Length: 255
Image 1: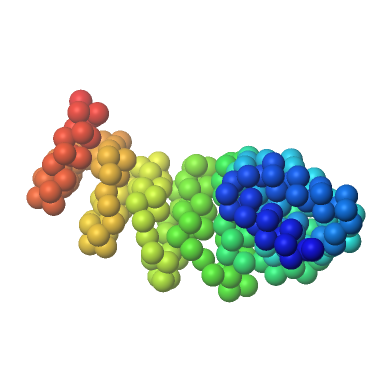
Image 2: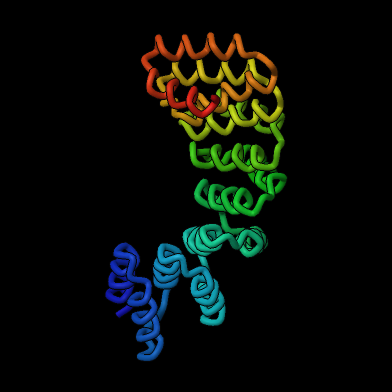
């Protein structure tokens, strides 16, 4: 029956067996077992995990033909499958349909959309979605913030990055190395060496791990602004903080 097939398809989805999941769905339709929203959602999720975005889109279309109503989970799965394969235009199209059908968006929807825009170099769209999340009180995660900040950083919009970073700092979202490295890179681009060094101190105070990217970018920000004395002072601070290995690595890169 439907419940049994749903359990089997979900098992295939969790095990990364998208081919088996599609075979089970095909069998259900051949023997005329009713397919539910859960059936299609699990099958689409299986395709998402297998990076089979075209199959995920085809299943979503088949869902409509079968007059089965998609849920938030269904939309999230098909949007995420498009995001993972760089199909940001398709991801936004599904989001548009989602809004038209008045289906509720959640943090997974927004995160996948912003990541899709980031991968597609569409920082403005990423920022619009991020702002819409805040207006609709959709919960924001570290991954969501990282995607939005990285999208703006890749677009060379360092002021937007700084604005987003300020919002994140004031929220309850936990910062990580990816968040801060993107912010430091934007400072380097914008010639804001003071902010770059300040961010490194924030990372240390909040016990966020600094890596070679953090230190190299901070030093580069100082170098670009002809602030080599500050760069050397920063290295001294890093050494005191027991980052000798990282500092040594960056120094070798700079020479």
